[in-house]
Image 1: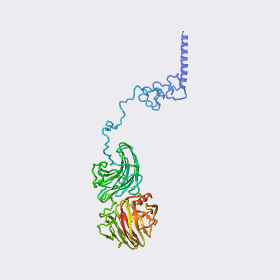
Image 2: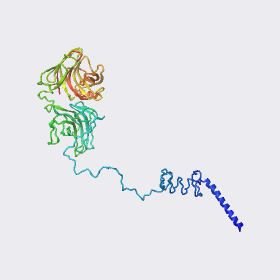
Image 3: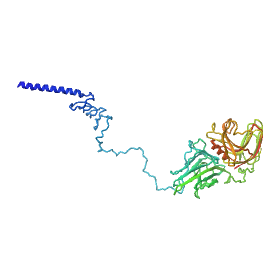
Length: 546
């Protein structure tokens, strides 16, 4: 019995040892121990505690693709389809879409997105008070007219400032944008477009009346000494066009139904309600800030408009038509006799005489100018060193003057000019400065400035009366000017066939310079001149300006 029992015991012991030896060998191959990460051995389901990356771990196993134990905190330990332990934060394992997101707990919509300060829609637009169609809209706030690359400068007689186009406070209308600077009478500004069915839809073109170049403020213009406004338009569609004056305090005075062609309006023609019979009339004393023309919209239908502004400037005198001879001195329309006696000027001097501005300038003594009635004057000079100018005209002028002249006497043994003369300030791109001296030469002796030394040709143009003028530009360096000795530009328009009498439409020459690429600025004066240089001569002229 002992032998049999002993045998059984021994046999069992040997069998267990053999099995343990086989298991040890198998587990050695299959990465039984944590840390042995040989991926070449396939998953062995016979090793319950194997820690191969393809097998689940023991209680504290933290191998990839396995769920952690209660304290597993390996950052790479988020098994698919499971949530990590409290500290498991591995984001490298994507969410397993085989297990759908638990939709039993919906997103909490009880706390909406916080927009901090949303637009308050609790107070809707009050539609119980309709737009008042009995009063035209407030057009006193045009676009900013500060200095920008797309803005253009207008010169309209004594008015000057940046211009604009606009469609008024109601959206949906259209208007042509400005494309260039403009001088009244030298070309025209044309706008067109469509207005929506609303009284506040407008087709506007306007300008500041006392704004310097480079300024972002409108300025204030005093109407003292002026009687009204000259405006000239053409209509390509039969629509109503109004003109508005806007004061520095924001008051608006208008005149309704401008006709095609020129019209001279007095200050009393403007009223706060120009579309009716009531309203306050403009008193001609409140400073002005802006002037604008516009086509008003209609409440019941769209409006097509198309019009051009040709002339716009303030006028002087008591007559509603400054082109009409009133016979009351001083008469700047016809040059008729005035009450002032003739006056001789033999030193550098400027002033007014018989309703015209005048200036005499010479760089030597002995030369004299005689001021006569109206725009008439005479001048004599002599000497090889002479440099003398005598002129009579308007300051600042409008740029629209028609100058009729007759030189009863004009002789010179050397360099001399006879014609229209003046200055422009604030001329853009007039390198090396912003000051331009201009000449419209009707006759010259000995020296043609359009072909002289340093003159740069800008072509030629033909006036309405068939005359041809040559255009040129030159530079004067550190020479006498209306601003003292400095460098400035000269513009020339020289008549090819000389004459001692005739009529000059000044606006044609300003337009020709502009079209040739020579920019215009603020007018300082428009005068008729007799000039001599290093010569001896005399001139006696009759001049009228309209």
